[in-house]
Amino acid sequence: MAALDLDLAGHTALVCGASAGIGRETALILAAHGARVVALARRRERLEGLVDELSAVSGSAADFVVADLDDTAALQRAVSGVSATILINNTGGPPAGPLTEASPDALRSAFNRHVIGAQVLLQAMLPDMQASGYGRIINVLSTSVREPIPNLGVSNTIRGAMASWAKSLSKELGPGITINNVLPGFTDTERLASLKQAVAGRTGTSQEAVMQGWIGRVPEGRLGHPSELAGLIAFLVSPAGAYIRGQSVAVDGGRLNAI
Ligand SMILES: NC(=O)c1ccc[n+]([C@@H]2O[C@H](COP(=O)([O-])OP(=O)(O)OC[C@H]3O[C@@H](n4cnc5c(N)ncnc54)[C@H](OP(=O)(O)O)[C@@H]3O)[C@@H](O)[C@H]2O)c1
Image (cartoon, rainbow, N blue to C red):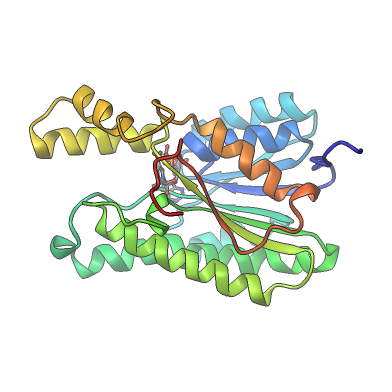
């Protein structure tokens, strides 16, 4: 039996939100599998450091784009010269809070950053995917696609919109071009640290107690590491992942109750 084909040599991957957390680990593992990575985020100094690491990992030149997904026109300009057959849609999650207290602008802004940003990037990269007959699009969403999370009302709403966007596209994109969602559970990143701080402040408990409460709901008994999400992404974008299409896959240590 042949080994799995996880080789990404010859492919360029545009990895968004690559300056930290899940995006950064994804950039590193895709480079380790041979992809040329173009890393996108707002913090230039972090991207410069990452590009040096990526070049060392893959031996091929990596590149970066400084762009803010909140600014649609600037995003379109920033990626106009980028060609990629692998697109990782990943960006900062919306602020926590109940939906009853969220302003219409909070929803508008989250829709703009997540759905409009992904649409701009899809349309910019699709011609190269179609020309090469190989395309992989991954959206980093949340387990809230399956079970909405209390006190993350705007995030829950926007993740559902992204999941519908992806499912619709999975029927429209031609053979060889797949789209899938990965759903992080409690993953040890800057995003989780800021949520922990917010919950502790709101409930008057310690951050340690908040974290232990989260871990208590995870059968694996620990937080996830961003590299565990990145490993699934590397598989889905590889030749071996070719027949997986329109799916949402959780990496949550078993926390979801949904079958
Ligand atoms: N960690 C978890 O437990 C968890 C659980 C469920 C869902 N998620 C979701 O998974 C995604 C990734 O999470 P993470 O934990 O890796 O987050 P993170 O550590 O906060 O990293 C977020 C990344 O997105 C970039 N970013 C944020 N706003 C941006 C913008 N307007 N334009 C361009 N880039 C932007 C950040 O870079 P710059 O600041 O340099 O732009 C950073 O590279 C998020 O949507 C998060 O909500 C995470």
